Length: 134
Image (cartoon, rainbow, N blue to C red; front, side):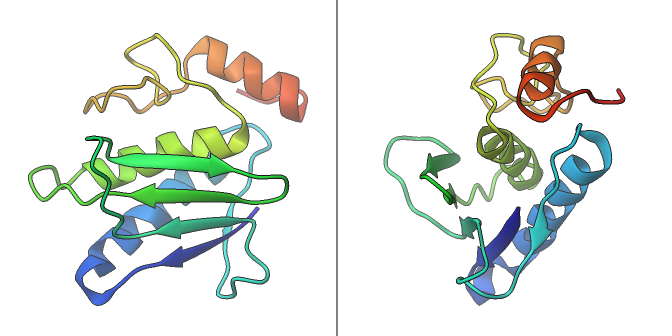
């Protein structure tokens, strides 16, 4: 899925976090592949940095027929948050719902240790994308 990152100069550090989250999905997760694109016309996913929400979430994803938009909220007190939040939001783009397992990257709350896909996440990905080599 081609992915366009829209940011301003104050958020360039987060660009690297988004790229690292893309690499995590591409290296570790089933048949889901994201690529960075430089044009809006070619992008299936748009990541917007920064995005100021008032509901307290660090990120949100909107899915449409052929596209998705991820909005990320800066959290200066938590420098590791962007990569975890992007991993989580890319999971939604891939078709994963929230997971009640607090170790899962798809757990709803932002926890520092959520770096893995839980078994239910993996089974959902296999249902969507076919057999995976875990």
